[in-house]
Image: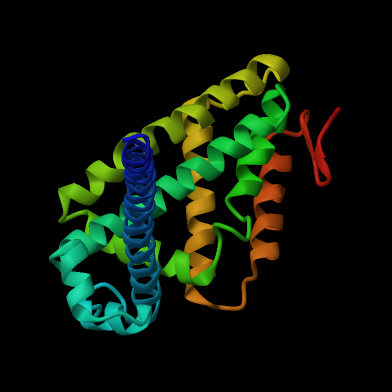
Length: 235
């Protein structure tokens, strides 16, 4: 009797242990599938950026993206179903990346308005954001934004926050030094200047990222002479 009870107890313990292992394996598999899904989606987004940079908006196809990612066309359809969904996901990724980048630069700079403005301008020409492929992809989306409200909606709120941040910093600098400009107009001019430099970089006319950044600094020094030097904000 005691032997049978002992065997039964060990059998039950083994089942519990086996069940726990199976549960852990299932959880691991589930996490693996989730990671794999996210990895595949990101591969496709990156391949879409490459295709936009190489072929432009109209000529980019799901087949091009699949080939660029080294995945089957069925995988593209499984994750995104249509070219439009894939493009929206790509724009979402780029907008999120850009917003996170400039917000991180803003938070990392010290509390002075001049330091934060300097950091925001530098962030626009950082290697992580300012690459030919990404600039070309942005230009492809800009060209379609007027006729596609979804694209405008994706970036609209972020653009408003970005512009408001520049207005706030320009207002602070005006209050500190008594500049004669209107903060809204100066903020608009700064943002337009940087967008123009991005366009020039995308055109590939010999302008380098370093020269574009130097041109932006030239504008900062001219607009805020009591705050900025060519080496950085005045202490």
